[in-house]
Length: 474
Image 1 (cartoon, rainbow, N blue to C red):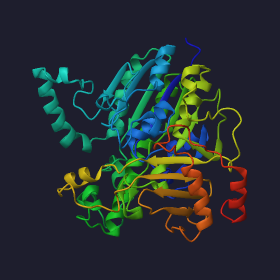
Image 2 (cartoon, rainbow, N blue to C red):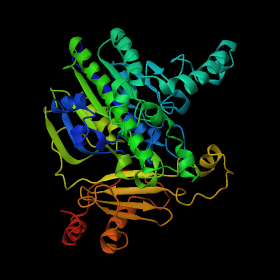
Image 3 (cartoon, rainbow, N blue to C red):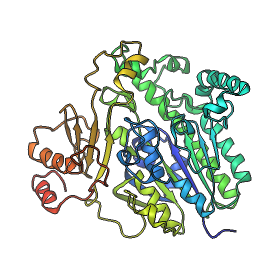
């Protein structure tokens, strides 16, 4: 048996931290994750570096911010300039596999480097290749037609968490240790289909499942003003979202039990997180686009591995998905200096800064979907103006405040202590504090454009003291 632990990363796609009961939510959406959190280290302020799957998950897999790893709104594929986590672990002797119901996380977009096996669960044949040469074969052309039918009509209504776990159990049955597994759950992604009792558990009084399914989930039409949503519609969608989260939670509970029964739980470094959150009517938005509010970038993160992480510990300082890769290298005692030299994340093992000392950073380098794509998919002329969404965004977050820079000048400043839901924009009423945070944010961007070097995530003491004098940070 190898002395190296197994590694299993569970990504609950589109799951925002605020809807887990272990993060203070009033609904009991996550009893199994609550129990796991009590046996893990839970990070209370984990911040995603992007607001949708491709840039955010590639930040997790590379330890780099989107502008550096290159898979983002301006370049919709990973250019493979830097090694990924599964590549490094495979070189170390790990068996590597991935299970993904998210089509952005696939070989079509260059995100599967380093995986021995990668199952694309939105396809009828999960291992169907993506190469043009393969698609030229007659039987594969037929398979792709079948896959399109399956993806459109069957996949969205499946109990996807159970579907993913069934594939994962088969992989675990045959995996040689040590293994690295990267598993994505997608139930909390639109259209929010829950399983069994969870489907109706939190629906408003008088609303049945048929009525819930009638609520229009076309976020593209909503963003282009073609769809009006009532508060009851959003209340129903939030209930469906919570039910979908409870479905994932139930399956993760079964998975943890399975790891225990297999006798590998304590020798498996288990990480549970999300790539981004979701707007369900908040900020007049749907889905996960055109925003860097905490509904999209504040994500859950818990790590269970008793050999390195104290059970039941809760960490209040900022951490980011970019920190997972260097943390993993430290936990496995892997040096790989050529990899570490490029990483922009910080290991979560060892001495950590005080909660007030570390900032967090997120970016949306261009609107996604792009404005022409948004209009096209909503049935409008491509050049239809969408001024509210046609902008890039970058944000800096202190534990108490957040500044969002917008390319159209519509900047935002929030006091997270008094306004955790980010409802009151204090810019420009708090002009001095906003200017200091804006200057600090923009200092990371080289004159040529994108911030290719690591953002400076520790504020100068004089800046911090002035913000403290203004009463804007503790």
